[in-house]
Length: 115
Image: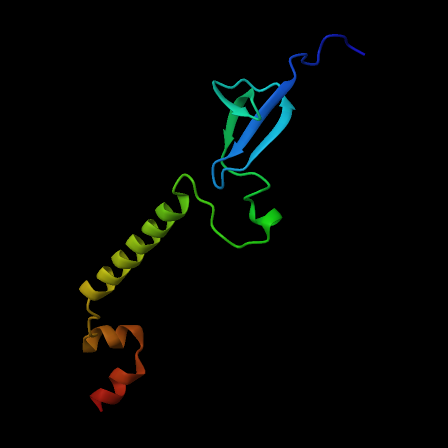
């Protein structure tokens, strides 16, 4: 086995869920700029967007966890597309076929209208 390939700077670190504020103390090598004090001891603080305390798989709740606005942007694009589609169909009235166009296309209603 190779020697000295694993990190040696494991230390207690606090991971805080930004959705519900839950904090976990675990050992990690992650570098953190912020610190927090729990039970009189100061720990490095790492903020995470989602953890087991707020993830729907672990909580059993069906809710949308959207920190970065992805769902809002998707809904806005969907609404804009729907509005554009409705405007396009409203602005474009259906043109009636002339007698010659109907004959070229082989439209049977043109023949009956001619008779």
